[in-house]
Length: 391
Image (cartoon, rainbow, N blue to C red; front, side):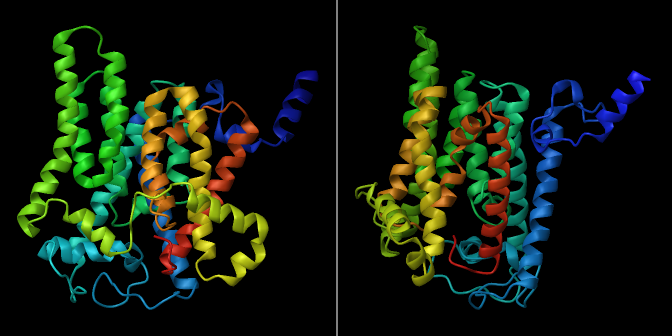
């Protein structure tokens, strides 16, 4: 009789949300896929599909902020056009014609853009698996999987599902750190080189990788040479890209000159943008958000960057100088421009922060983070889809 009452109480008790986010190992269902990498890959792919459906729904329900400049098939498609907003739309003429003075694309860019979607999705799926492997070097399995979850649902992580470079860059960056930390210098160098060829600011990972090599290489001369060769390969990616740009334009650093022509001038004081946004939100939050056209978008970008800057000392203390240096360098560059555009997107690839957040022991904090991230992910995805200036 007593056993029956106890069973009834257990059945009647609600399951806390925190137990769903971090279930105990004993409660794990036996029907799960045996290999963690396969399970994470399938869940990541499913999340991309779900996110695409949400974007489609937002595109159907909410009015566009401005007239759409790009379409997938030459005519409006409420589902497919969500993948080619802002910079994504420019990848088609670049892929077709190279780096020339490009025009808006013609009636049939679908093959190029569909290829871009596939590359982004595959990059995202593999990046989630890579983050799990990297996080497991420092965390138990459950917390490593939580790092994957937080990376996937970060408010600006929707860029991983559209035709942007974020997912591919994240994949090669995380893989490079993983191989350097496991002392596979050649593979780490190749992945790092691919990352710096994908995005030139990837070279900012070099101090962190050099620190890992210096810390772990030991006194073996051959091991030192292998580590140096790996670091050289990281530099090789941006070197080959600059050589390609030189052949096109006659200036190997034309990529830097181009962003300056768009009004992006890095090299200033990196704290000024954060101070401005903090002052506006503290001194006149309502007037700022309701009265200035770019204020809502600058706030999303600026607050994300401010949170990541605040996390740097905690990441450094918990995981060491390499992760701290990586975050510092990749926050300094965009912040030194004094602009807010793209700050959230740049933060999305700063994986050490998500690994640190996953290491927090408080279930309440974990639950709050998941809810907060999911809410703002949906908001930012809807804003991007309806062509608000969040890019």
